[in-house]
Image (cartoon, rainbow, N blue to C red):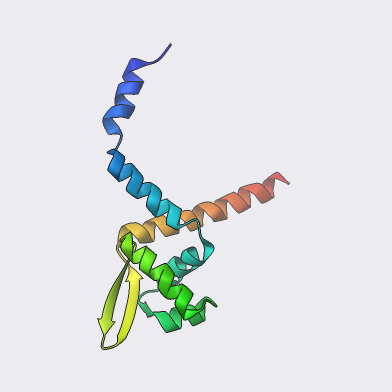
Length: 116
């Protein structure tokens, strides 16, 4: 038997289809390791493409392409100083998402290790 109150609660708190799709897009961006490494690097603060690419062993072209995607989804922002573009995480929400993800991975590894 369906719990009508539970169903009503879930439906009342469900975001719009557009918001769900946007969230799925953001999580989809995290499905590519190079983009995740870029975001982790940006936890350290603002950095230019050249330095970022060197730090994570990625070509400047690949880093620029990934940054364009991340920027299009409002995950990173760009600030220009003359001809140099500096990228950083868009806001504290992105930082928290990454930090929680890293914490989760750490806990998963520890829990998995304890089982063996």
